[in-house]
Length: 76
Image (cartoon, rainbow, N blue to C red; front, top):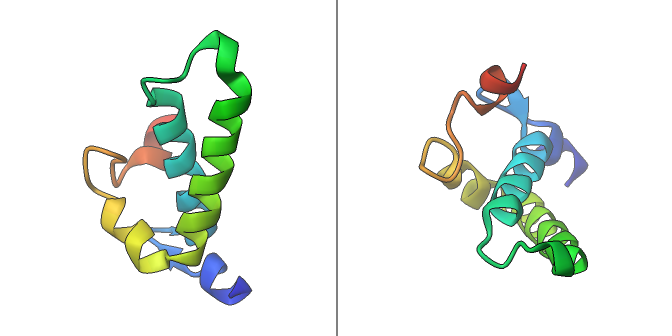
């Protein structure tokens, strides 16, 4: 499993993509409020864990309105 997470997709590992997607979705979640930061953290961790376990599903989200293919270029 570890080698799959390090496999590059568009120049970045599945591990990096999973983390970025989980962060994006949890940050933009409608329930993300100041008084439930713990719930946001739980959501982020569950999403990241799930995406790492499903690399093909993770890849399907890249290049959609969920996360752009050039996401990492925009933040560097």
